Length: 168
Image 1 (spheres, rainbow, N blue to C red):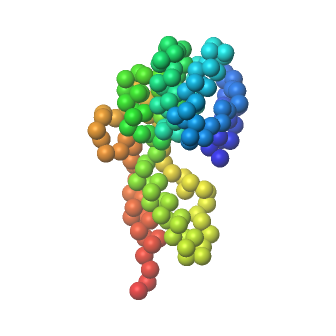
Image 2: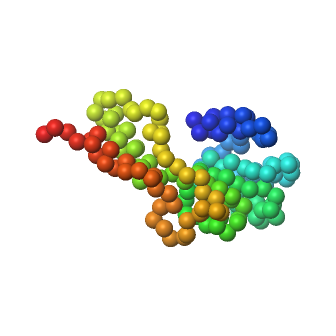
Image 3: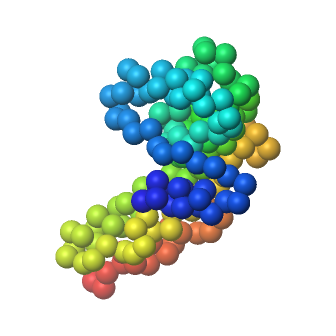
């Protein structure tokens, strides 16, 4: 679903051009992803940004692009908000931004969905429970060592706890 949403948004961008995704598996991240990205950038020198589907795949891309001398040619944008990716952003190492999810919210929402299914109820819609996120770039990247890079600006725990209370 994320891929569809991202591609649709880019297609609607009046100054953007896109190309199809490079599909990869978790196993190929360490084996070949970096080389594939470097090859693509070399054969498409007009590329300015690469959208990485999730932060754990970004280090292979960052390392490969830096090693190939392409770090100044292309920037990476990813998704999750892992500390390593935030470090790349803070240091200006290929990655320009990441969409950081509130990791606690994500965990609590996943638990909520599981409990609904186990209770024989339909999962909450929309899928993803509108998990809050924030785009983090060099301007707003938190300092290293923080507990979470982003926390939702509202008290979701109280609301979830209300849902989970039963009459007893």
